Image 1 (cartoon, each protein chain N blue to C red):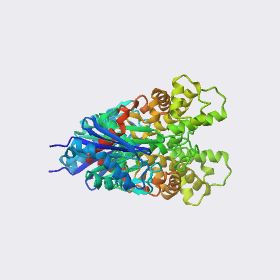
Image 2 (image 1 turned 90 degrees about the horizontal axis):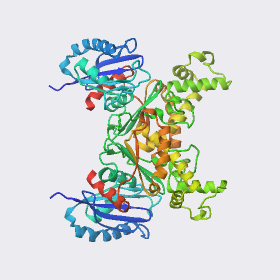
Image 3 (image 1 turned 135 degrees about the horizontal axis):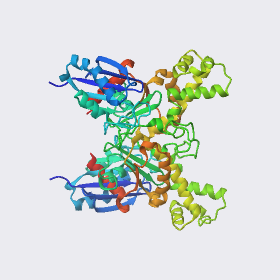
Image 4 (image 1 turned 135 degrees about the vertical axis):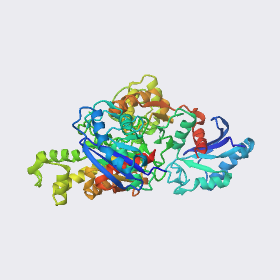
Length: 315
Length: 315
């Protein structure tokens, strides 16, 4: 009998979510645990497998075709997580091999943005598309580029680092050691950096000046929805920079759509509208009015699990 | 019997070259004619077919699998040449259909940079590579991106416009109507623009100051080879900007190599060395010391014919 189920695992810096997904994209069972608090990656995997076992047992292990894992810096080719700054384990971790042995399943690994791109292609906003870009706008900026219906992994498995394209030459210092990377402006942390810079140099009245130290992208989002002028200006500024970088990316891969995913993407039109305006103003004429900017259509609760599980059907 | 020959046609702004190529990449017969001087595209095609007939007749038309055409703004999906600024015909020209009917052969069209990329993949420096970028550095800058062993045509067939990525925000005016495009700096005309700007504002002694009005990329290349300081500085400046843009492109598609093709690429190490230095200095750490910068290894005389003919075997 054909196996109809896949295990999807999303390993984040703080939490790890997992679930069993059928071929239609329905999550039939799921769970979550902390990523942190384990001495070694082996201890983490032992705990993860212990948490997953009841789910696979109930679904019937013989019905599960394999496991897909999305993780920061996950490499599709090698099955390794390499030097992930936001995960507790240092160096190169052979995650697919370790987990595959413990689960007795074939494990396919990629980074979280690539997993989300495959999830959107199979179950979400990119169904039927052969050329699109998936953008994850969270603590950082990640991306998955799909061309000819295939994810671009590149020669080493690390393609799709749009968050580290230089948006502003000699701009803000990035965690990667360079200056002006897109993610220092157009991520959840980037928009907060902009807000803090502006609060120090401007005197505008704004609802969040008093909460400067607890400022988050969510606070700014809510203030903008409430009509706060500075908050709205922050989204315009962020969208303007993001639109410039997207216009250059479009010139390279000419996607049908660019799909916004992750925390900052929850701002929806607040971010998409100024990004679209800036992108169109910066596009080469032949690409104008062709590229849709869309919000992810995966269910928020299980999007990462769905994306990771979809890797199994891409094999 | 399997057909072992392909017709390759390269339509340029000034000249059109054509040839019959065997599967090993040997050009067994070739010819050339002017692209200009015909009232309509139909007249041009009639003359082209008349010139090609003796070659196909001699090779045996039954041995020819099809024709591949490289042309500026050629679109693989539609078979049309759309609004090519450097060709005599305006608007949208259904070139593949017109030529296919006249030749009684299946005709596959793409732009000249994509044809060169396929040529390098099948016969040249990119043999065996699945992920690389081909860069044409001529009057303008063109590019062909290959990922997963396939050319990226994008949703509309116009992908790969690296020449119109913004290299310098609010920089030089480009023929496309925007400002700061890579091709205004890193093309044969771009390096001449830099030279003329510098001659106007600087007083350096240089061998080509007296020939300012006839200055070409070739003159600058020769001066640099002869040890001219300003000419060498021009290549460093050009390579520096090109390297910055290539570092961003690598972050997107993570190629194994970037191959330099066309007029300005003849400068070889004069251009490649400073480009490599700048690219490495601007690369995200995970991509450093991985990407080769190579010169085209197709024979100069027939490179464009080879590339165009290779389209037939890509079908």
